[in-house]
Image (cartoon, rainbow, N blue to C red; front, side):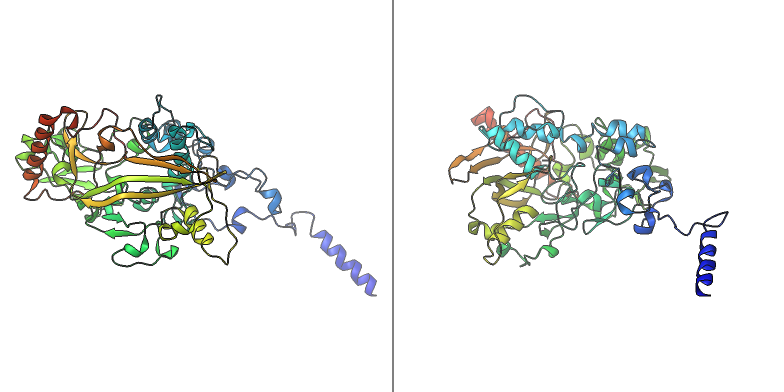
Length: 493
């Protein structure tokens, strides 16, 4: 009786696997394991970008051929280019993808005679024999952390995507928050443009000194209180930021995603004549003035230039020479590569805006923990190399901008940008290079556009007159001492 009942049940189960009835084995899809929210323009299958096998019934088979970062420069032509070919054909030569300008300026300051097409071509040598090779090692292991080939440092606000996802996807606490591709917000820009570099000043931020005990107000050393890896003093933000304008309201895709993209200018937006002649697509002429339609939907009334000085000095003085409220004046950037296992002398200088260095110094000064080797990863290959690159400064200041002349003779704002000093102590504690100074012209002071715009105030004339007086005095004593920029193109180093 029991055997007959068992046979009947078995036959009923088998019959369910035939005909039009659904199979009792159901296929899992990608979204059964991964919660994904996409935007309306990217309603497509996961494998269209990530590849893999969406017909598999187990994880191992499903991930055969899987591409975890399809927007990475190595894959973006295939994944993003299928719909955005015009952009992906040009973006590989853009400034963010090549870093060619800043890389070549730095290498030239240490003796390079030829230029590289991309930072990826920077030579690699673990045991440098010349100061240029030492400079290349610094670039590859400490400086090349912010670019679309790298996902950033291991701090909450600076970890980002790669390739197109660097700017167009939102990351939070080191993980992608949504698969909804968006216009770049300021958070994406600041994931690379933090510390005392262009972008952080737009928000009025000045990086703290490296020793956490000498900060005002006193702040904690804990990593989770430093989302950028550095702490900062809050100074006066740029007037455009105060009004609610995003970075991309001025720095548009043409500039950011093409090699020869048009850069913004103050005159193009604040001169009635310029606006009348060539009205930008995001600017609307209305009765009595012009309105900027921001990328986030906000509308901004554009103030137009009215002061006579704008006409009198338009071709000889840059806007920021009068309108910059403050700038970064950090003098003497000292970088020391140390291959030794002596870490106690660096304990008070562990907060350097670099997670690798900070982790090793703090770990190796804790005698209850196993010592970690003094190695840093190459930011191009991802492979570990010997030595830690420590950073220090001769002096750190925020001040009224330095004035000088650019390659066209225009009076403009300057800052110390190439005043580097490089040193190296090997594992035997032999000093291989001792504070070798860069050979950049004008002591490394170069043109820089502070993103700290505000009213010119009542002392703008005195600022210009004081510079002219200093210039005349320098020319009278020696023509070589005049404050001016060399002929190399501007950089945001």
